[in-house]
Image (cartoon, rainbow, N blue to C red; front, side, top):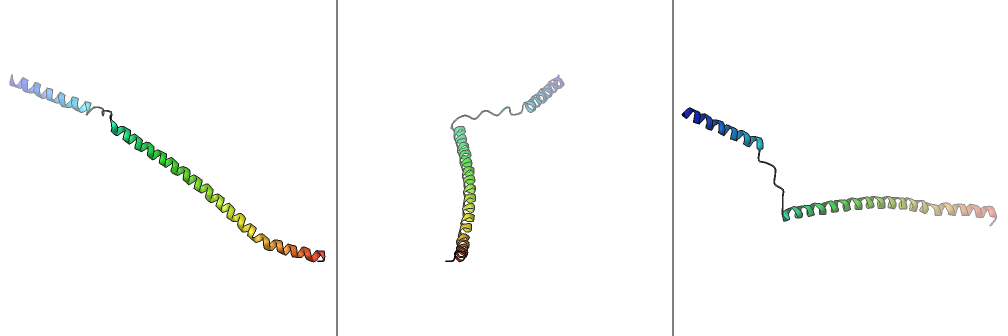
Amino acid sequence: MARKTGGVLTLATLLLVLSAMLMGCGPKPPCEGVYVTEVQAAQDEYDAATAELEEVRAARADLEAEVAAARSEISELESQPAALEARLNELKKGSGR
């Protein structure tokens, strides 16, 4: 009789361990309370700041392109007075003045 009881207890223990292993710890309980909203608010703030940073970087790149174009135009215009003065002198010579 002791053998039957020991066998039953061993079988019951084995089944209990196997069922616990199959079930695991169970699903994670959902987070509730103020901590979730604080974390979500921080994540939203981070996302907004990241988006704003990308917009500023894009605007800066556009402005740098405009500045480069303006500097190129300025350098072209700075070289024109000498060329225009030389042309004016040629025209004055040709007109007899």
